[in-house]
Length: 388
Image 1 (cartoon, helix red, strand yellow):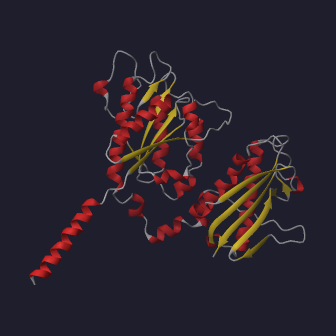
Image 2 (cartoon, one colour):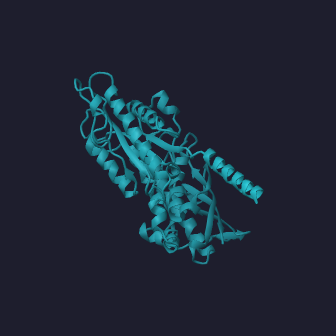
Image 3 (cartoon, helix red, strand yellow):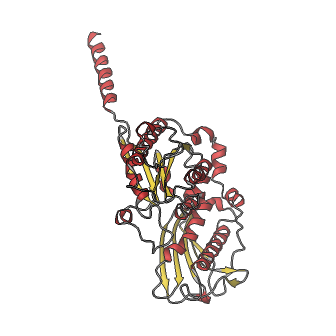
C-alpha cells in the first residue's frame, strides 16, 4: 500500500513539474505602417521597442503596399516586408501608423483596408486590440485622422487602445509636441529633430500599453467564439448571404461559341475559362497600356471573374455553397510588351473570389502577359475549383 501511495505521489509531482515547465506562447504584435519620408517608420520602431519590453512579446514591423509603384521610399522603409490583409488575423494585437493626409489616413492605408471585406465578413479581427499613431507635416488634423482610423477599427470590432495622458510626465514642453489622448503623433514639419524625443517616448509607452492589453486578451475566448452558435457559423459562410449583403449579382453563364463546353469536372475539380463578356459584348476590349487603362482592365477582370463564378454555379447545380476550395486562378492579360502591372489587375479577381467564398476563396495564382487574346478581350481567366 505504501509503495502504491509513493508511486502515486511521484506521478503527481512529475505532473506538476511538467506543467511548471510549459511556456506561455509568445504574444505577437504587428506594427503596420505606411511611411513616405521615414517619420512614421521612426515612430514604428519606438512603438516596437515598447512592445518588446513587455515579457515574452514579439513585435513585427511591416508596411502596406504603395498604390503608386513609382513612389520613392526611404531605403529602410523599402526593405520592410509588405503585409497582406489576411495575415492581420494571425496577430494578438496590431499598431497602425500612417501619415496624416487632409485630416485622414493616407490613401495607401485606406486602400489596404478597402480589401478587408472578407475578414470583416468572417469577423476575423473581432476582439483584437489595436492602437493608432500618425505623423503630420503641419500637425493640423492629426486628432481627426486618428479618430477616422478608429472608425475602421471599430467596424471590425477591434478593441481600441488610446494613450490618455501616458508619457505626459516626461514631455518636453519647451518645444511643440504631437501628443494626443488618442495616440502618439509626430509634428514632422516642426522645428528640431522629428520625431522628437518626447514623441518617440510616447510611442514607446503606447507600445507597452498595447502589449499589455494583447497579453491580457490572448488567453481569453474571443467575442467571435462567444457569440457564434453553430447555426450562425453556418450562415456566416453562406455564399448566397455574402452575395446579397454585398450587392453582387451573378450574371447568366456565357454559352460556348465553338465545339467545347463551358466547364469540365474531373475528380471533383471544375475547370473553367472565361473572357470579359458582358451583355453579349466584350467589356473594355483592347490592349492594356495602349487603348485600355488600368482601371478599365480591372473592371474587365472583375467582370471576367463574375463570368467564371456564373459558370461555376452551373457546375454546382445552382448551389455555390458546394464549393470546397478555389484551387488556382490564372490571369492572361492583353498588354503592351513593356507593361508590368499584371498582378495589380488580377487583384480584382482575387479580391472578388475571397469576398464571395471567404476562407475557401484563398487560392494559388499566376498572371501572364499576352500579345493578344481571343475576341480582343483585355483579360482571360482560367480557374480551377474543388467542389463537393
